[in-house]
Length: 127
Image 1 (tube, rainbow, N blue to C red):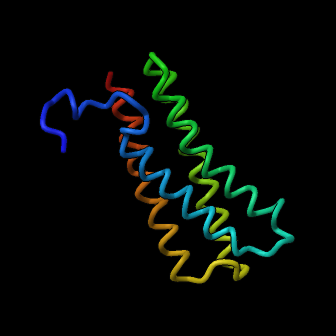
Image 2: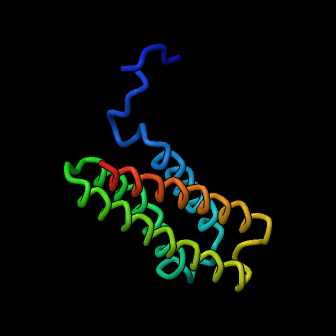
């Protein structure tokens, strides 16, 4: 349990709530796409997985940057990858690769991540 202010300080990208929630999304995307048809291995499966990993990777890279402008650039790239995922899971749902209840769970997680990314972008701009 963290008890001092120094222990609560964000020192690594993995301390960011946005990264933690995006990482949850990565894991969910990998689990969901595991059940996609084999002929989608280089289609939606690959696209969804790459976009999900891109979100967390860009958050990590943005965190390492010193300037607000650079941080915002990487956080916005994360947001772009997130929008790709939202689009692709709608497609997956509409072609019956994802059942509606599972779709809603994944989509809701994308909304959580989107809100946190907007917060990161705003925070970086304010510095």
